[in-house]
Length: 425
Length: 116
Image 1 (cartoon, rainbow over the protein chains, first blue to last red):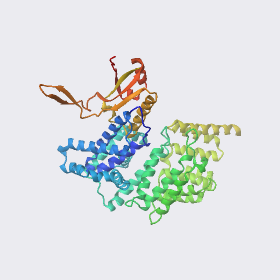
Image 2 (image 1 turned 120 degrees about the vertical axis):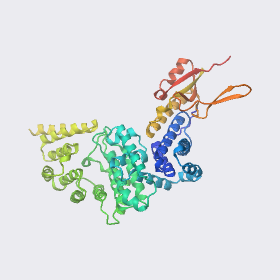
Image 3 (image 1 turned 120 degrees about the horizontal axis):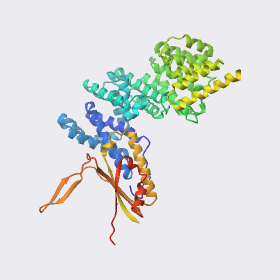
Image 4 (image 1 turned 180 degrees about the vertical axis):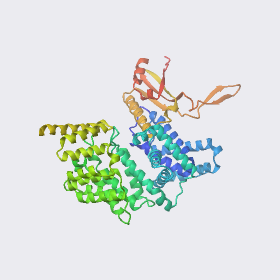
């Protein structure tokens, strides 16, 4: 840096995005078997950029700088590792440099590379948890510590999970070459599920201090859009997932209160919902209903669309939403779906009907000690004017909250319920 | 005002486990700090040195002896240098007191000896 220090700044998230982009591009060129070398080379490039840019002015084109540095670092690492490598890999990297440089500038080529990388990460031979960890590491550029934070586990276990997954993929000789059929039949379900989980990890976690992590949601949204637009993955279920995530993401601006606390649907200022995202959601939704396919993403998307189209809680078509939850619970039963159905039931048929259902319901046992269950019970008791029981349930929810913001929210509700008991007596 | 050469020394291994986001944040920290120093008019010049390809040159019998090094793999690498102007060594020291480099490495500071 010199005294005439230029005022260049780095685009937010540049390193994370470039990490994914460079890994995708270089790994595809030298093959999945050597993905570790690629990861190390990209890390070399980022470290050297960091050490250089910290002291000097930023380069005019940071992405191009990083690309050159990563390519050189990879050539270097390939040379050092040559005893275990066939010569061809090295030659290919050197001779296709110009071609690759042209490729570097093309967004479409980047999407192809990124898609190959995600398909590799979401190979059905490895567990769902491993698919997610690998995607976060390679395709989203998160560090092991950050992934551990997102998945509520330790960095050691994330690192182990990633190493084991890569070993399994190597043992199976998994490559980036995929037929269109393999991609759709074998990989796409895992890819979509991983993106769904990625969004979920960012959307609401009861255990994080930073309860909403917009970054993970934004990544999931971006990837869902990329897959929906890519001719190789433009399937009805891809469109349905993209629609669901767009509708849900549209509500994010209204979900955070002034003190950073979560704001529930009933209290959200709907004028803060993002109209552009809702519009995009409807576009993906229209594209999702071209075929016969009816996946859980379709059902969840239609529920989200119903909310998005409603001007208020009262004007929401709760009967329709209840019907969709009935279908979801029938076709894709899960405790969370069952609990959400209860909430829809409350608005469609009243708190008493919801209360009778929740107390008599099978399939909710696994949720009975969860924050969501206690919070739902509390809401129902309060709607029924049972303030003492509501206070107890809010108290239980507050104790289960993993973040102070969330705990405070339930403590406030607890106090409000207590105050109503006193008013009544 | 005297000039002080500040050499940034570090163990590059410190950085190998950082995530992309952490690295970008470090750049921003250094950048903000250097920007502040430049704005105060105390920064004369700053340069990063290349890690590899450096050599030691010595006189031999009739010809120059060249040996490789220093290496980036070493635990103590001079990664860059800059020159600040300060009224005294103490002031130069205090100019550095909030530099983010303290979190990742250390400094060697030498006053430029000006002959009359």
